[in-house]
Image 1 (cartoon, rainbow, N blue to C red):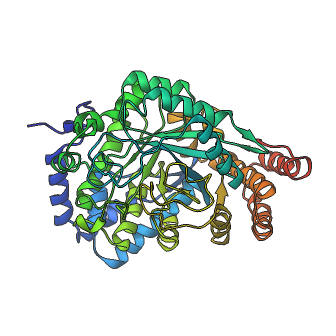
Image 2 (cartoon, helix red, strand yellow):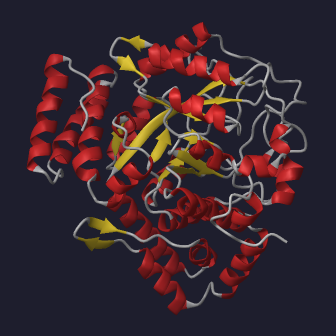
Length: 482
């Protein structure tokens, strides 16, 4: 029997089934233990130090107690602390991105994904480099600066060389004032050598969702194809980091397995990365299973309510205070609003989940990976964020200045975000307002920028940011960054 060891490189030791079961038992036994819950909440709460706010985070076991807790006033406290942590580390910035689907060819048999090999109703499509360029121009015309590229696993149709060619094409397209400044990559688990190639291509974050940490369920949900190999998939982040990629993004597909099990596994994976590599996940995504072609989410009896979903997001924020948290357009505007308050720091906007979807006038549905619940334009999403007191950020400065991995984390932990990411967000928002925004969005945006400049602690940084914003508006200059 495998023994739990967060420093092990063996999947069944760092995501240990017996440890998760013991954690869930402990959480259930202590879910109404008020002195214990209060001590965990106190540990999670951000403390002011000489270096700004510091939150110590929680272990998977402590966070699981909070997730199991069903005392209403304690749940409210969890939400309040989650919001405090989000503001302490990320301020009121919300980073925007869009997914770009390159190919839906796939050799895997994943039973929850319409791209599975046996689905014969879905037209298979793979973008040529000319089509990639068209998609990128369409995304630039909206105002996007950051993409997450997606492709099914198919060694013949989507080899690593194809992905690398697509990245090169994306970075090469300069259209009007548009440029994609950061390409994150969400492709199947691969080799150390291929991760090195992705690093050399200048990618931002490597994203790979575990889908489920429950090995028995994982094998049933992935009956055929390379993804069937649980250990190879689960150990992918270690190979990515060995290949030089220090920003990695975790996630599970909530609703496939019991959510408390997934929650504990996800946090154990974060603890493992911290223990072995000295830096936890750059991002954690919280997708829920949704309807798609050939897939009915009601076929999975582990779907979760909006209330539980909100609680999961808040508890992740308490456990891993420094990580970026992502919610996509899978979720409705209403759900996304709630999650923004309890810790989400990144959202997608105007997403199309079909191959070649952006360059078509009408949203195509025949090759969508999942139904998009939030179908607003990017301008509408930007305005909505600002009306709710958030700063929409198109910033990619840290990645381009080499502030990745532990360098980004130390910036985040030292409280320097307000002197760095905050002005960068305002400058990139100004670019968006000048180049893409509607008149109404522009008006709200400039009012917000004026207010937010006053929150920059350093007078020197504030003066430079103010000058740069004037340069963007009056002299059509672009791409300032701290």
